[in-house]
Amino acid sequence: MRLTAVLLLLLYFGIFLVPKVSPWCGESAFFFAYELSLFLTLAILALVGVWGTIGIARSRMRREQVPSRHRFLVFYSALGLICFGLVIALGQMIPRPLPSGSDQLKLDTSLWIRPESSDFVKGDITPRQKMLGDAVAALPGKTRSEIEALLGPSLETPYFASTGRDMIYILGPERSAFVIDSDWLLIWLDDNGRFLRYTIATD
Image 1 (cartoon, rainbow, N blue to C red):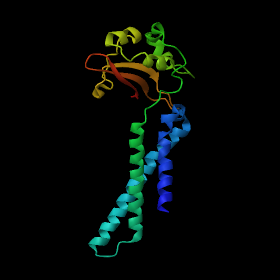
Image 2 (cartoon, one colour; image 1 turned 135 degrees about the vertical axis):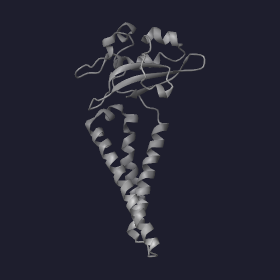
Image 3 (cartoon, rainbow, N blue to C red; image 1 turned 45 degrees about the vertical axis):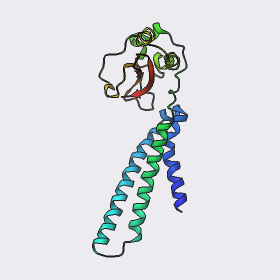
Image 4 (cartoon, rainbow, N blue to C red; image 1 turned 30 degrees about the vertical axis):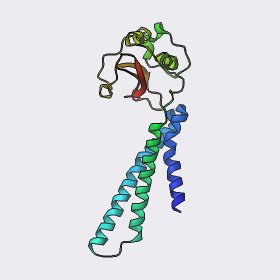
């Protein structure tokens, strides 16, 4: 029974990793609903664990036999939280692919640097989002000035400053079923001022 519980928990929490393989899944209404259920599940697991722990502590203070249901609650609460932690750790090791649609266009600097290239497009993604794949493929080996020749000047904004990023570009509205935030291209340079790495972040 315990093995079955572990497998079911890993399967449930493992859904969280699906967008790592298929980015379009992370943009679906189903995944949004799953994320909401995830918060609820974690809250329930935490509450169940606290309830079971209080029950065990109370029984021991009264020098009574600890009811098996309290041990059961604590065990499965801890098991669920550990499974979630393992999935999150695994997710950190899996490289995040570019969002779907990132390879629809070749990089066109004249189009990329236009102010409207990151503006909302009804029923579609922005030109920058469509050129993203080609843009990041051109970054390795480039200096700051060479990157700016391709993508224009980095924005002057406090967004994601705490990450230590060196350059930042807005891509457009986030690609999800419910658009709330924006997608950004963050770029880090090495000590010699050359491209080191990038990530796509959502504010």
